[in-house]
Length: 231
Image 1 (cartoon, rainbow, N blue to C red):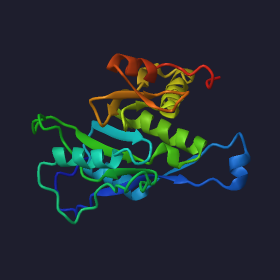
Image 2 (image 1 turned 30 degrees about the horizontal axis):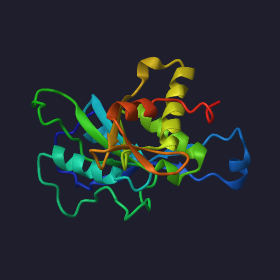
Image 3 (image 1 turned 135 degrees about the horizontal axis):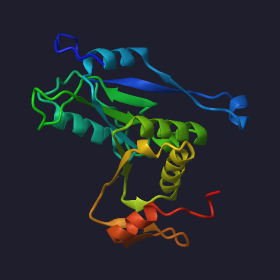
């Protein structure tokens, strides 16, 4: 991709990169239906004109209201060399557990690693993904998989830091699709970001209570398959 060093363009902050096309009632009933994702042509043009290859892509995913958009904004603020203008459109954050991000949004300005010298090529792209529990199962799975495919760093935000069976199964099924495709060489670099530390928790299935566990136990459960729900 070409990179324009002339920064005279008007900065706009974040812009939608991917839109999930809502399925019709008939499509939802069709077991063969494949959810459709639409790329924003304006965002595509921005990537082609402003971003210098190689592009490192950091994607924040997770359920609604866990803080993905806030983390994306903090990441941008940490990597911006200049203080961003107050009139820029930041990643939208909702109050409570209500989701406001639709599809996938990107920061429209290329970022660079703080230790990267001027002679080293490359730029960083920040993506914020819609809460996967805000979509129907098939659309959410496809969006999750898309983010996993394009990402350099696939950051799963977990808040609180408890074991969520839905997230575990979704991560397993997405990784399993890579295996079915025989594409192990493009497996993503996965980061699990448990917020509200220092406690690691999981939910007792019988009582519904949070039980504190060690980090090793937490990681083991994250990557364990639920045989009762997995075919």
